[in-house]
Length: 190
Image 1 (tube, helix red, strand yellow):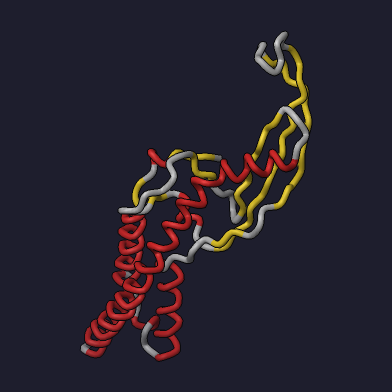
Image 2: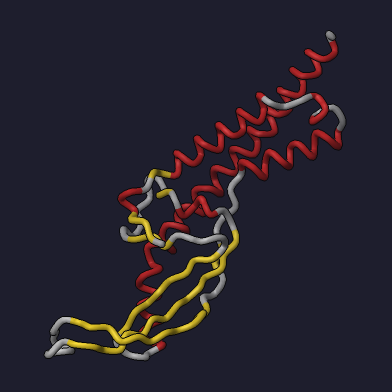
């Protein structure tokens, strides 16, 4: 599946969403979630896991499989009379770790390669390359060209989330401590 960069929101929208997740989590926080040091640390870890972003790191691609089919094609320079030709489809898979959300947003104030972003299904990005010949080297060259906008996007987003995570982690810690104090004040007066 693909999405063009011109139809994507900026990563600041994702940061705003994560901030809203934090605010809702804090508004719904219960005293038993921060009452002891162990519960406080567990709650802090849960909130960090829900709000901080993990950079996307790709593994090397692998050829999953290839297929060949006959297709009727119109006349062209390489097929002057038109008619059926062999089309080879190479299916490559990149596995990755990190947040899938980073594929859905473009970075702010960073130039990236415009184009179609290859979107993941689960923790894999699957890319189909169609050629008129059975040539793995050409298929890998086309794969690199097709993945360039995605790699450019992810590299820029990874850089931006590292800076954001550093700042946001301290915000989480500060806000959770304040909320803990508020809850203690409320429940001690009851």
